[in-house]
Length: 194
Image (cartoon, rainbow, N blue to C red; front, side):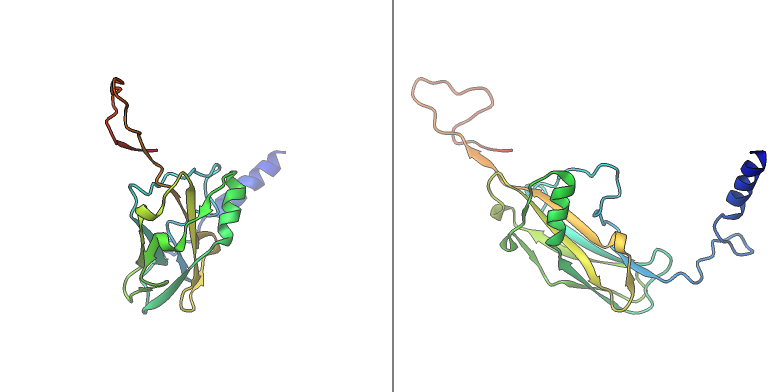
């Protein structure tokens, strides 16, 4: 038993990260990858976080593409995102939710491609959400995946992102009749959002 433990400790000692003679981690031979550093699907957590983004507070979503944590892009890289509705069913199944796909007329984006310029490491493709078009009590979801990175490999576990949005469930309080006092915190025609 002592021999087994000694062998195990020795193996752990000699399997540390490869380092060069100067003690710096050796990244040679590792191919650069393009990732979405904010990727959240599949979830990295034991329990996936529920939807918290609200159409009232969120008017811009960012799709981010990053070239390697190690060095900047050697040339301009055209990265393509695509709306990935297949992830919606997977997300709903994995989290026991019933989110609806965000309607196409509820957001705007300038295209599906972004360029990581030579000498930089990342680029952002903004999505503008139109809160007025997200109405009713529904909760919505939209998912995107990196599909092409101009010939550079894409990390499978960091390519997809899912955004969840709450609908605009505005309730108009009906007019109060004669002789009925206005309750605390309410006013005529006030709009309350949930």
